[in-house]
Length: 68
Image 1 (cartoon, rainbow, N blue to C red):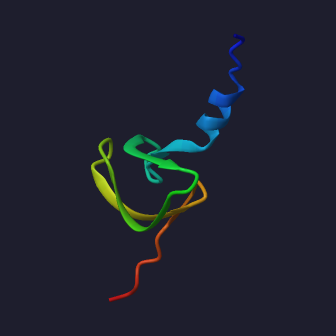
Image 2: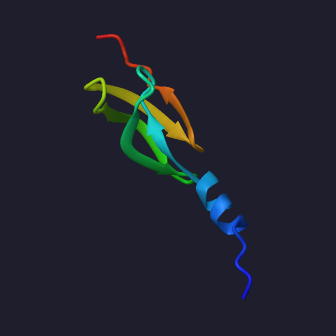
Image 3: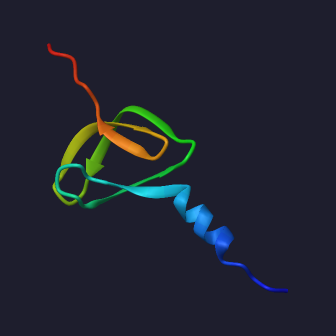
């Protein structure tokens, strides 16, 4: 049987570890292609901050916080 590494490469593109938008450090949160997060409290162990983010189709943006 011949092993093809292409399946592994496509699987890697379907998921990724979220990096902190402030310091760039890797967090402990992994998302997949079908993951949808809205107003998710992302905690960064490096800078010890919590940031609300939205993640759709492996793209992350900061959540719009309403003015109080």
